[in-house]
Length: 53
Ligand SMILES: [Zn+2]
Image (cartoon, rainbow, N blue to C red):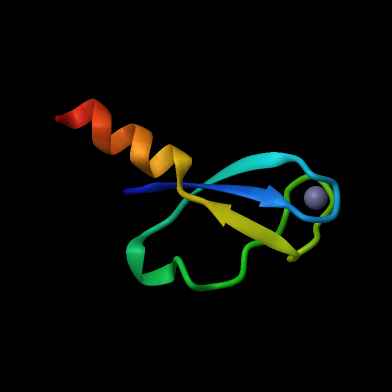
């Protein structure tokens, strides 16, 4: 299952979420402050991909 990295726009902390592809578009809440104002980062996905090859 892919790991998605998010940055919270409210408290500016990074966190990772593991979820199936089918649910990636659902809203994610920041575990630190509970805000849903988060932005997805692809850095961790790229890291996993480059490790494989
Ligand atoms: Zn937050």
